Amino acid sequence: MAVMSITGSQFVVKVGSTTYSEQVTDGTVTATPTISRTKTLGSVAYPITDLVHTVKIGYLYDEEAGFHGALNTGAIAGTGLTVEIDSADAKWTGTMYVTGLEVKFAADGVAMGSAELVGSLTLADLP
Image (cartoon, rainbow, N blue to C red; front, side, top):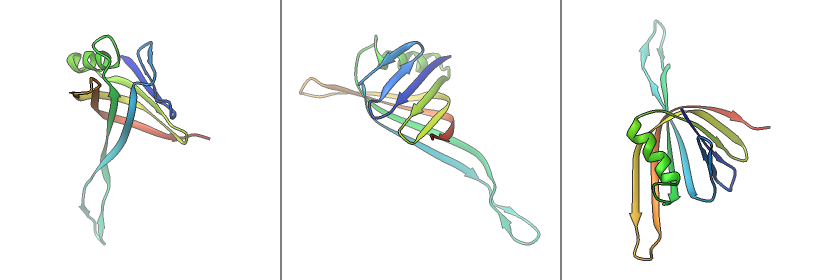
């Protein structure tokens, strides 16, 4: 299973044993709970039955040998990537699956990529 981490404001990304620096331009972590409405004797309860995380990453396209290639390989294989995202205040870890890759080619010659991953993450506040 590959390992991916995004750290700090420099956005250093590690997939497997390869570290990619300065490719990632932005990212978002979204947690979406599934909440079920359950009627009880006295009222209504709203338990969370599932929690799915989505990670969106924007990056400079670096061809098949770079970060894009590592994500593309994971998408084709359909295997989970072990993900670690570190920021100044928090750390998310877990297994994510690539659900989408996009590359935009601009007239100025700069190609940008974006990826979407879905899976389960654990959030821990950093000291």
